[in-house]
Length: 90
Image (cartoon, rainbow, N blue to C red; front, top):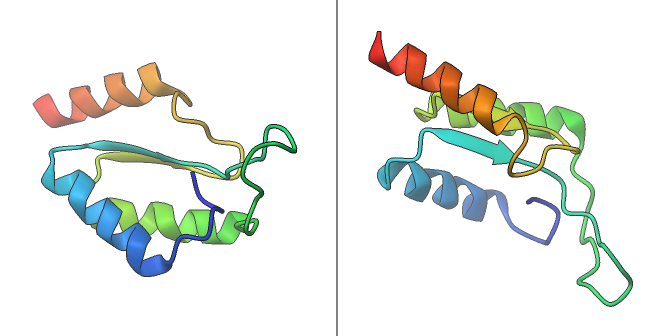
């Protein structure tokens, strides 16, 4: 989830760490404060920036990336997994 005050350097480091750990599929979404008692949103990430992160993650070796303000960790998970496994085994 983006929008909690993370820096671009921190996001890039996390992407590198995930790839190094063997992660092939990535989801990036906007953090939305569920209730007033939860951590507030630091900033709203633009759809264009989500597109840029998607492109950077793919260039960094991720097989597939779902990236957008309304994407959640399970967003199209089965579809992404099936598609990625099919591509990687052919």
